[in-house]
Amino acid sequence: MVIFLHILGNNIIPIFTIIALGYIISRKFDLSISTLSKLNFYLFVPGFIFYNLYTTNLSFDMFKILFFCILYLIVNDLIARIVAKIRKYDIGMTSAFKNSIMFNNTGNIGVSLVTLIFGNAPYIIGGKTPYLNEALTSQIMILVFMNVTMNTIGFYNAGRAKMNIKASMHQIFTMPSIYAIPLALLLKYFRIDITSTPIWPTLEYVKNGLVPIALISLGVQLSKTEFDFRDINVNIAVFTRLIIGPMIALLLIHILGFNGIIAQVLLISYSVPTAVNTALIAVECGNNQDFASQEVMISTILSGVTLTTAIYIARNIFPV
Figure (tube, one colour):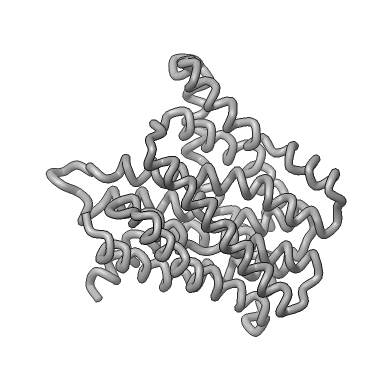
């Protein structure tokens, strides 16, 4: 119980505090979620992806993590199709349900969690944090994959409700994250050093701004959401995201033979609630915004318990 409370107090509560601040400020000043969503999609997310991909050393384990992410996405897509068929969802609701379980909050909550967890006890040895770099590198690979797929497949799913395929594809290619990835890889491949140019400090500021802005955006979106805890569709999505999701992750971790820090990061990252960006995508595309926002809100609230449990399990099943 002491460890459980330690995890809750040091890893979970700080994140929820920032979300709560966004909620409170929005209730008082009625902040624009549309403006914040554009700041996230067109500035902070691509900047964060570019910076971290440019500075990350890509090893075989990192590509193995990528394979894990692909398998996980496929499994969740299949689950969403089965649930949609049983529940007889229309194309709009099917797409919203897919996004709610396929894309988790690895950018907003995941990065913050990994930084807090592996930068604090019991991972501090001799006053240093020897596991933090490996943990963050693993998290960055998950984040890059999540943002690429969310800004392509996620927008395609949401756009399908009201757009044809051509319009959906056009929406995808307006997202700067699509171009940040190949640009970072090309600069790495040709060994072009941009760290001494004036643009680098700007990228550092943008990179550091993602987590607080994204968490505040979540709080703002939640302040504008009407909640109905009796909505069966929302509850099914929340259960799938918070309970079934970590179980699938645990199974794939064992199948692919991960252990230690990488296994812990994978289990924790795929135990986080639904990505706030799925609600922002729903707003941007006008597709089942209420369902998307409620699912994000309820999964985020309940993750205070489920995430704490997942962190505890990860530490005990995959010791270092």
